[in-house]
Amino acid sequence: MPEAKRNLIYTSMTVGQVADSLGFVEQAYFSRFFKRTTDLTLKAFRLQRREI
Image 1: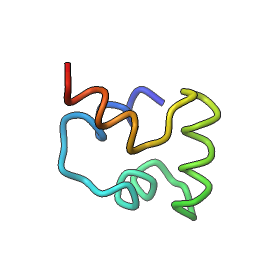
Image 2: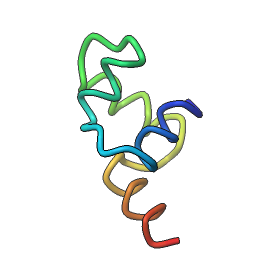
Image 3: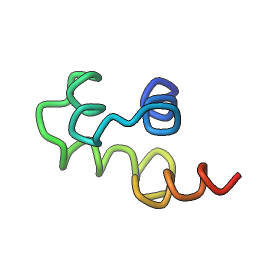
Image 4: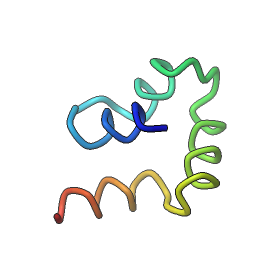
């Protein structure tokens, strides 16, 4: 998960590109996995980190 967070914060990669780079076959599964492990949606995570 650290690599996913790093890519979401510091790159302009799309969610699909991040999911693909981590070996997820479907973006939807990556989104659900991310929410389960962080308690945040991908959009909420990016917005929260950019405000800091």
